[in-house]
Image (cartoon, rainbow, N blue to C red; front, side, top):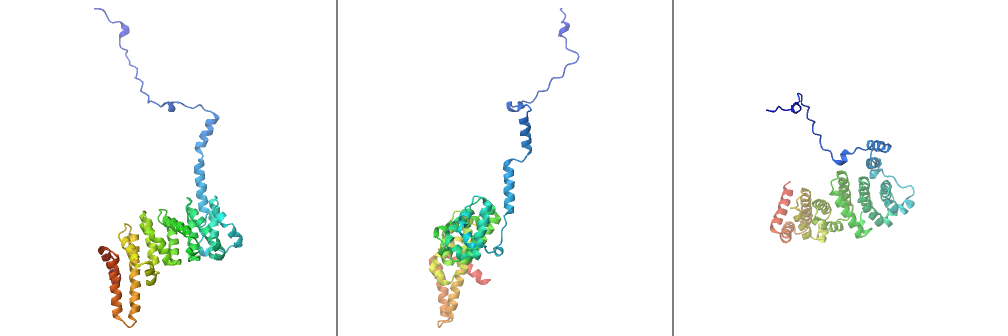
Length: 326
């Protein structure tokens, strides 16, 4: 039997099998050579990128913008010259300049309203444009300007066109409905000033279409403003608007998804019933006495029955009875 060659024998110590290296992608496998340019890139990675620096500058700028209260605004030293260039300043691309111009518009509205009145419509359209700014500081300052304009120009509809006021009203409703709390609160404040200073009847007509808006928050804010208008109306003004129309709006809002809208609807119903009761009380002082009061109560019930479906009429009656029991 032939012997196996010694060269074919196994070695005494087997070498350790090399470990399998992880696969690298082609891009990762390429290591750039060190160069002065590479060093510069490394330094750039350790420094703040341009976008971050710009954002920091913007944040610092917004902090520099001061929100001045209306009572702290001082008269303009040269109001005629300021009025002449106000619209152009409001249209400035520099947002800090735009904020300054908005504060000037507020000062003019408070202390020099007679000079601002001739260009009020142009100013309002410029304010509407600034309200659309992505800068929160510009947006809030523009809403503050609206509040001062409302307080200074009660009957704003007689000084501006319907188009200008409609655009302003829509923006206020949208801003009051957004998630930025400090902007929404400022818009709600402006709408309260609007409802308190403007004649309720024309404002109620402007607000009515928005209770059918697709955005439920816009519906709620419009309902609140309508309720505030109704609280300032007497029975004659309500009849001029249309008692049935007001009842139908309130009944529709009673089933709205948002509690804010439902509460506003209850306020409208109570305001309408209070106006009826006041008329009945005035009638009692006449010759007919209690008979007039009974007729007034019957007319309220008949109005609800004629204007609303039975279920809605029952809801309205329940609100009135709850209000009387409190």
